[in-house]
Image 1 (cartoon, rainbow, N blue to C red):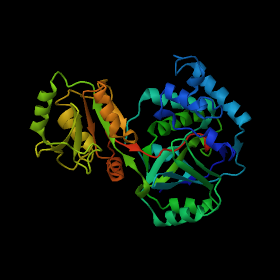
Image 2: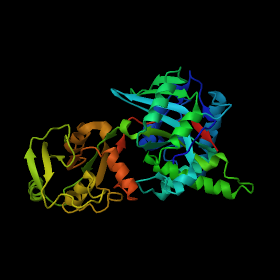
Image 3: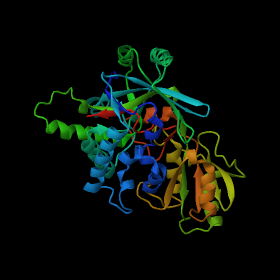
Image 4: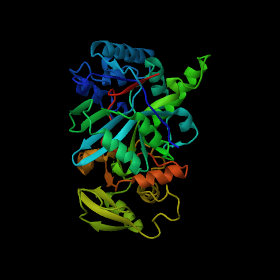
Length: 410
């Protein structure tokens, strides 16, 4: 069963929400965050990426960085000001990007259910990133950005969500990137919670480090609390839960800096031994799974694995296109054994389009690039249900939630 909990959100006033709302901390680097927050004193990036207010080159993990986050958070609470709800609430959060629309329920979910595997994951986490967000939570005593969860769609939940979104929204604004954000406070949270209790499983789509960090922060706060009861707010973490049939995954493409000692001609010949290759492939990328497009020497090629190179068996990870490309080309031909650590490979989120792959190769920053078909949400669920781990950079979810709209204090 999936238990969702109302919470007392700390949130900006409606006339300031567009100034506060910020992209997730982990989709921008320091310089990108600094540019996005320039001239915007209420931008939540001052809290989620506090190094932008420190001298260039500041240590991201130094005491001073977290202290700056706390100072900026308190300043935002005071000056914006941020408001705390009088009563615990659930919220509906709609994202619209172009013709795509998805509506989820913003709530808190149980750290215990995460630890017990009732909230399933598909990604490994990095200790350094866990350490960072754990310390961020403990310093602020708040979870400032939601975990992106999904579940197999339920018609009863759909009907309740649709009814709740007929009311006047709390927030309704379009961000600078064109994504439209609308948030409602649920009028009947108890009905939503009862319906979700019938949902058998939740799945992390995006935000594995936030979830893991919430668990570590809970452990630290529990150990420091001699009167721990299990009902404290730190026993839960902030999430927005979307039905799987509304999710949108874009491709996560690859670019490699060199050809592992081969000339372009020799490399193409080696690829032909493992793939059926066609010339002049569609520059927008492949139209179905099991197909890859490669940009090399100013031309697009279509690649289809031969029988001996295609994934076999029923291992849900081995069947992923990212695994087929890794096992049959990136590793054997380009010598990339571990995409987590190899500095020769870069990953390009599908929101940037295949034009970015062309730029990387034509500018000499990469020697070859690969456009993939998006991983499906069903792939993600199958891998999660098997207790397996997807390869790094398998999914790029779009549109993305914003930090700073709904904050969970712990």
